[in-house]
Length: 448
Image 1: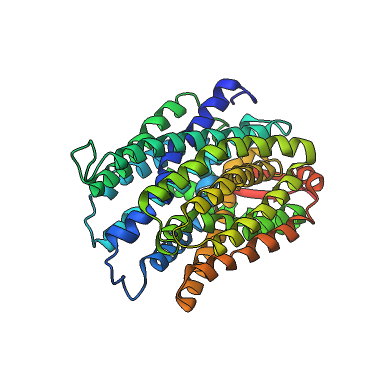
Image 2 (image 1 turned 135 degrees about the vertical axis):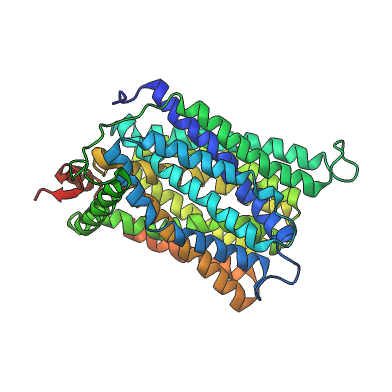
């Protein structure tokens, strides 16, 4: 078991956020616009515009991941294999990312398949990455450690995006690089896979395996794969059934499902919205994402400090009020207004890190440490399940109205409802209830 609050372990853990954030930022700033401009034909695909198709793609990919994550988390907890699972999914996702730039224009179906596979690697890796958080920190440090991870991610992703922007600007007509801009964009996507894989290796060298592996429930008579599958599904089912006995934890889950839907929609749709509705060029969009990344570094640490002063729940509520203002601002932003887009990007950057980091740490302070990967598997499911409905609503409203403006305004409802539910959460009661969980093999039990 790694010692809690160990600087070397925390640094290694935070470095994984640095590693995979190159993929995350490239997806939002480059891949979304690359898909809508280069992969999807001008007439659309299957009767859908590129913007609506991207929104539906995000929803479908999210749904595919919906059930698998808590099962994988339960298996990783029981087998004491979070580090091995993290390594496997990280390197798988990075390897598939390397293939995405080779899809030719018009290759919608192969591009969709590759994107879904990279999402599996990215999301599954984050389940095991998040699962380390309550094991390497304590209640009084978990907010700061979580914020540090996001801060590393924003800087790492921002630096990579800065390099990618330099390559793109230096290409094409009049550029110093003898390549076209389309080739430069493809190279930027390829480089994101290399960054993800390379820095994952650096991070994993400083991140030890934690916990002790359990014994096979049948004494080793069945294969390890079958035994672990049985354990994973059994514990997942037992935990799900017993969640209703923890009303405060369940209340947070409901609030998170609501407001995170709005956050994820802004993250996943912003690149396509800026391209299709705001009619901004690729360079402006990438610069906007750079603004988000570097300001989010300070915003993440700033909200971590705010949580210490006023409480984690209250700090999240502040961030949700700001999200409402951002969605309204995006609705009124005129087409081609690059300065206004940069201002909105700055606002998103300031609030994004705080909402994500504090939600992760608040949840981590309310779950049993010995089943952290399993519960973060649920957290991933909550996150991804919520991320289905926002893009789906955005795509539906966009199709009905013929514009993304009404669609982006509809997202406000998720922030408002999530904030209302979160206001009723009793954080102290939720944290006290985690001692009532017991896990033995494939069984999840509660103490009344």
